[in-house]
Image 1 (cartoon, chains in turn blue, orange):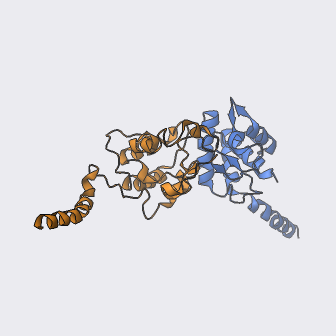
Image 2: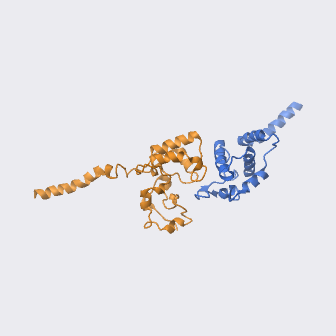
Image 3: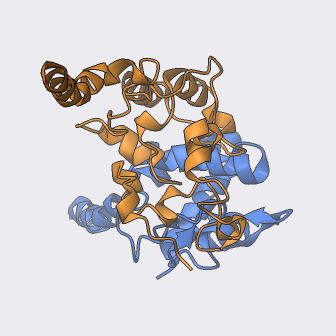
Length: 130
Length: 163
């Protein structure tokens, strides 16, 4: 009986696990590798990262103050579609695309690659914006 | 009478001769060649078009495209790097459909450095003030005035200079 209950409980929690993008689980594994004491991504840390400025540039320079807004390339003025999956479902569905833009933009803003934790925090924040 | 006829005949034939000759008229350049090939590469459209319009391959000579694609991590001050596979595919599309209007042996990085660009956009055509308008921003922003730029359409009749 006990086993059946456990199996049932597992079944009910499964959909929640499956709903998370594989991107985040990969990043979580990478974050644990980087830092053994890493626990979980934090939307709050992601939010401060999103709003931080390095000199005069940061995420908000192109993506605006809210990930729900369409942005604009700071130099060319070309439109950038919103980052938040709540308004743009296509976001964070293509791992290669996500990595490509983290590589470019982290280099651009921080002059270094972002850590797995920074990336995961960022995604956790952007996904939490409803 | 005979000379008049010959002269007339000549006058009729001349335009034909000039046409047949046009291949060599500009030192071998084919000025009728469209800047956009009939089939555009999808990856090129997607990747080169994410921060600015995907500049049609016929706007720069092949050595320029090779140089640009070889330094994407420092692309006009920005990191625009691609995966090696993406880079290879896009470079092939660009260097196979380049401009043949440039005879300079250098590989300029900017379309606006060409003599034909400068002559088409000189001060008599475009006042310096126009470039400074927020709606125009820079010479790199073809689409501000050439609505069909992203499709390779630079027809003069479809130019609209924004306020």
